[in-house]
Image 1 (spheres, rainbow, N blue to C red):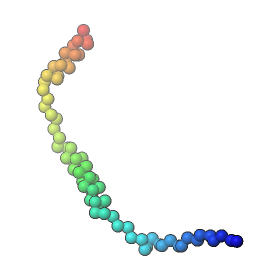
Image 2 (image 1 turned 90 degrees about the horizontal axis):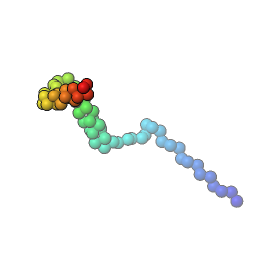
Image 3 (image 1 turned 180 degrees about the vertical axis):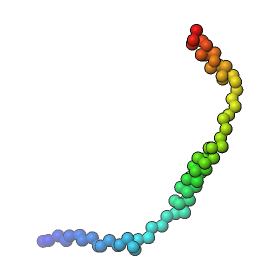
Image 4 (image 1 turned 60 degrees about the vertical axis):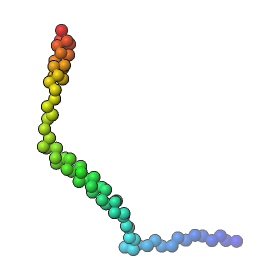
Length: 68
């Protein structure tokens, strides 16, 4: 008694395959890219924050204590 062998049907060509993406699969990466690009471009306008001079005095005291 012989057993039947499975023969797969031929696969369709790539011309017949249609791939559909949901709208958010394109929109979310685009929005993330635009946000990162704006952060990079806008960083040239950043200014140094003016801090409290107490931090500078504290660091100076620490240096003075270590030198003694």
